[in-house]
Amino acid sequence: MKARVADQHDTAASWLTAEKLEELRPIIEANAQAIVDKEVAAWTPEFRAALRKLREGGIENRS
Image 1 (tube, rainbow, N blue to C red):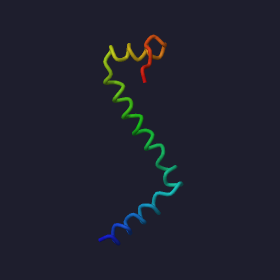
Image 2: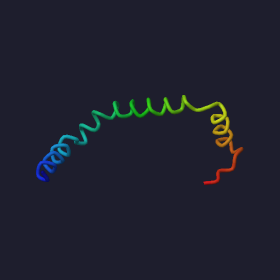
Image 3: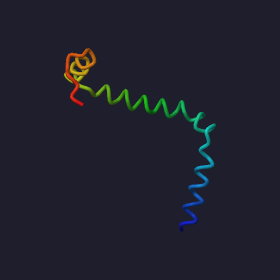
Image 4: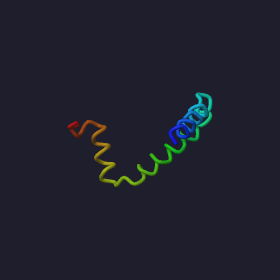
């Protein structure tokens, strides 16, 4: 069983090369942007106003 898992890992590692990653980059970035867009669309007007105020320096950042 361990050998089979190791073989699968080796196959996956050899498949995901730098070239393949570059080929997949536009797909990955588009999916990530879609997720961000969906999350931003769910923000309430109050949250947007608070975020805007924070960016303008109107709210002290407590982190």
